[in-house]
Image 1 (cartoon, rainbow, N blue to C red):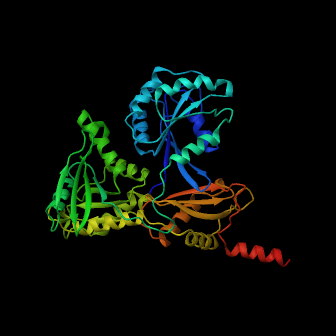
Image 2: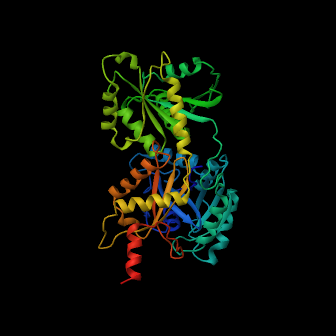
Image 3: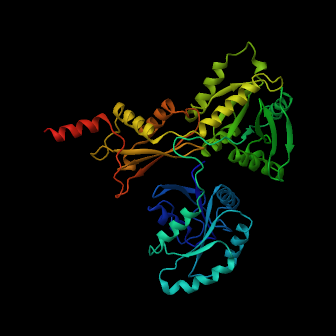
Amino acid sequence: MSIPRVAVVGRPNVGKSSVFNWLAGRRISIVDDVAGVTRDRVTHLVEEGDCFFELIDTGGVGINDVDDLGTEIEDQIAIALEDADVLLFVVDTRAGLLPLDEEVAKRLRYIDKPIICVANKTDDPSLDPQAYEFYKLGRGKLVRVSAMQNRNRQELIDLIVERLPVPAVGDGAVAEAPPMKVAIVGRRNTGKSTFVNSLAQAERMIVSEVAGTTRDSVDVRFILDNKEFVAIDTPGLRRNKSVKTDVEYYGVHRAQRSIRRADVVLMFFDCSERISKVDKQLIQYIAENYKPCIFVVNKWDKMHGKMPTENWVNYLRDTFKTMWHTPVAFITGQTGKNVKALVNHAQMLFKQSRQRVPTGELNRLVGRAIDHFEPPMHQGKRPRIYYATQVSTEPPTIVLVCNNPGGFTQPYRRYLLGVFRDQLSFGEVPMKLYLHRRRRDDLRDEVVTKHALNDEASSEHP
């Protein structure tokens, strides 16, 4: 399962960003008395004992944005509500219960997820009775805190941890795979619907169409070689300036939501057309959501004998330099050529994204990587990694516990990711890499390098 997410939501000016920074243990989100400072989702990895979760800060619900970005802010909030496993509904004890708090509560009423009502700005026990009125909202457990005065932080953390989903598998294990969901995305006329029809017409496939809600895409369930799959068919997209109607606007949102729902994304290109701005926007969204992806060059029969496949592969690699790990498939959806091989490759990516690596193996790999290439010196000292652990799957998420996260340069982080891709079992899927400062009570030091052994030997024999 993926790493649990905890979203901080509420109306403007209740102190959501202050609570976010307080729980994160560092100043990340901008805190200001002016409403609407936070617009995009801001995330941070939080460690509590042996538990990790991603904390998500959001903009204020119902904000009247001065730059007319209210719709975009609401979209970001909606994504956070959809993706989160636990919600922190933040209210302001000093301001009391306001109508906009009740509007937020109504919005959360139909969300079937654990909710904790966080009464912020309850700076001392004398203010506790003022928080009683928030029970009227009827939204989850009420906890009185003060981010400013550092009051009841551990109580809130304990409530969060209690409500996080329980991991389904242990170290080194792989859970039984559910039906793989494949989103088929791309701009107009790249052959997505034809590809879905090819799935329906292929040998030994049974298809049933289940229509989603008004804003959802259509799920097409099919069976291939006695395995069930779900293809999420999406509308073709056009450039944002060409999106003029509500239908097209919701089409963009359907495609984005389909990407978030999917286990694997098939990004379609027409081999006779150049890569467009829409393609780049879609791939950026796929990358931002850490989704396994295959670049699908469709209608390849048009290029028969005219162009080698290497030309298109190089074109894709040059255009999307950060997606060099993404496999490329060449198909003809109308005839079904290479369609089955494409589905099989997507299934392999799905398995990679759910793979776990034993902690011992991961630590030995990190040790070898450091022996091969030490991290550069930072402020006269060499940063050190104490141990590594994989904390979740989908995407595979690795935490490196070290003495100074800021001391590791971006090129060195890319080097470590490259080592993981080359040596571990998920080389073609996105990975998350976090560097986390070691707690004072954590004495583990499992990454043993040749340099560390030499230092230890020299200290014993001066």
